[in-house]
Length: 165
Image (cartoon, rainbow, N blue to C red):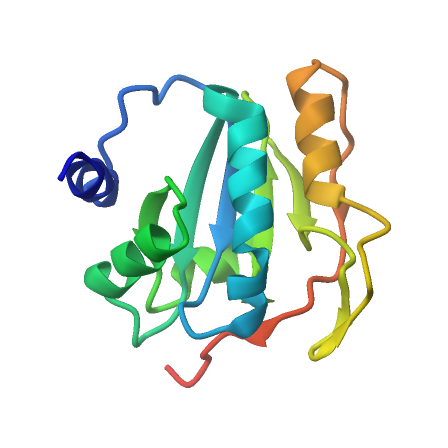
């Protein structure tokens, strides 16, 4: 019951720690197999970085609902604030084209990274045996050590956003 209440408060936008933090916007789709594949890695990063990072799951799909988003996060044991983006307004502002794709802002609100979580996928359906770069994790580690990080982009591989709106 506590977990459901916590997730519901996150949907409403309540967070006890909305002070300026490094923030990761994770663009997800409930039906994308690549998103599902990355949930353990995201869960591990949440555990590694703890409360130092604010995590926001963005659902840019006109078929997504609060309920389907909550169920996705609960099923994959992810504790993230939820932002619905059915009209792709937020996605367009940040230039996001696929799920999963991430946008990282530093504790001053400056965008520092947009792109893939790592290089495990080279194309849809083409997964390497293991990732050789871990861009999201590396950016977060640097930001949390107060290392200056220039804005960087990588090409994310995933499911195309539903753009028929």
